Image (cartoon, rainbow, N blue to C red):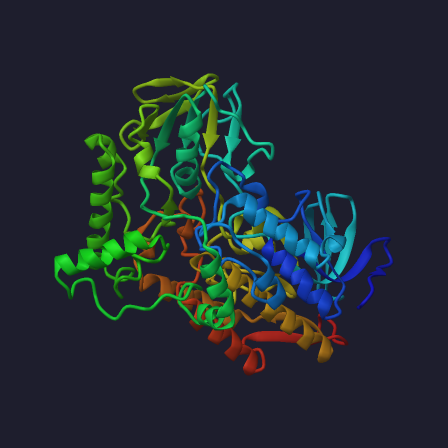
Length: 548
């Protein structure tokens, strides 16, 4: 293994610095160590797990089935780990992350409770100078962001958000010791995925829960249950074939692709297909019932009305039911959710829904929340208000590339990447599952492994060919930005004000950030680029100077 060396200024010199000890960062470290690179992970938490370290709110669980949401790179790991539920709860996923870290002895190269303050590219030396919160500056040839797509949490833009005198909690930074809400009156702001998962659990404990909803979301029952030993064994017996099918699929989960339009069949047959999707407990079960639900508004409307009728049938109070029905976006164009009794929760006597479209919040007060027609007093307030997704963690750090341009400034009018892996003007900066890659439109484990493998192979190529740096060309980046936009515009996604589009962050450019072209299609493109001599990338020999 390559050894780290001093860089002449008292700091360390490494082949790579990786930011983040979630699944992406851990696998990146594993790969680079095995390939003989010196690498360290910088992690602000005191443990591994990434999003599963921070998101410990009641009801938190993965919405990709456990048997799919796991690493495939090591057969023994794949065979030895046993998941207990169809959809794993957060504690079990965190336990798995810790098992991975221990099994491969990763912690010795992870520096916990440390963050990166600044990273500056030196174009003459072809290296990054990475300054940490510990006061050290590390020199690294490669700077790899494994900071996650949903890791930079945000508070709502509400007057007085800091004025409340009682305890407040954000679902993305939940206390590790948990919170006892017994006998308390609590307010919950937000009905995205974390709200939909946590509200049923909170209602079982708190004396009263008031839910403040600005935008109703589509959610479907997860049908979560304990896994039977025989079904786990059956999956493990076919894991190689199953994983390969996932890699070439549309969303990173093997699901048969439909051939019919929702408009080609009778209403009765259409509803039978939707019912199977509803009962499947699968995130894409309904979306893939027909071939045009993400491209035809008319077809999607039929699915929307099916779900709205389900909500109306579940929720007893007609007004509450109608308030929970989404009308402002097509099904699937905002993060679709899987739930465990979410709509049923609003039949409880201790749960009340406030429709903020009708009576908006005017301010958060020292004692609670005031809307346009009522003031509420709470013992605690919970912000289930999500994240500055995809880019938040990347621009939160001052990353300065060539000619002093920062990544934040480069992206001020919209994200620009090549493949979601590299950015023109920022040599040797890699972004795992970055903007304009399938990322959150896929089973993240499949996309993480593909990106890590691609980056590791690229670094080996540079080393073997005496190259000091690699950078996306302007032309390649322009092409990929246009391609990503065209792929998105061919769907219904731009019709929604979603975090996919950056709409939840005031002032953020409205761009569809994930790539919707398909996991398999994307993988083929990445492989083809490598097969054609890293088409669209510019490399510099180790002996070259910046002026050459």
